[in-house]
Image 1 (cartoon, one colour):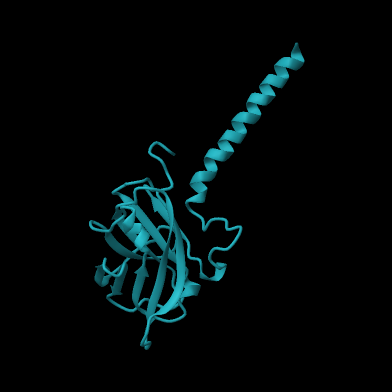
Image 2 (cartoon, helix red, strand yellow):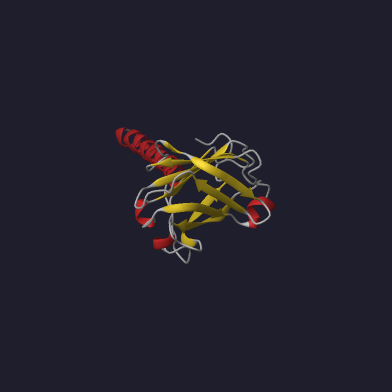
Length: 188
């Protein structure tokens, strides 16, 4: 009788622990660069990100697009973020979105003043012109708030090109492999 009771309690405990481990992993997955088994983006070109309110059709999604200091070897005059056509084709848009550039890592620190931000929906571009050149080797975070997420889940590759001080053309820096609309309403 004691063995049956012990087995039942052990089995329930193991199920509870495994359930907690699985539930906790989804929140962690939204803060990392993901796991790529075959293909995908080379690690040297992959940029990290975080998304708040990452639900389908959410109009309050907030994207934290991180750029590590090692990716910016010179002063930057302009940031250009290209997003895929599929983002808008599936119902995502930036109509009411606001963009902020912040110093630091994670969700960023102090705001960096911008001269102009242009949403070019015809070419699927977001152009950011800082007031002063962004210093070399400094980590920054581009925060895009009030994004309308697409109607369904999808991986969308947002590409970053920058214009360096003294440069004449924009240069490729990396790609954010965004996993958009990954949460369902009610997920924690």
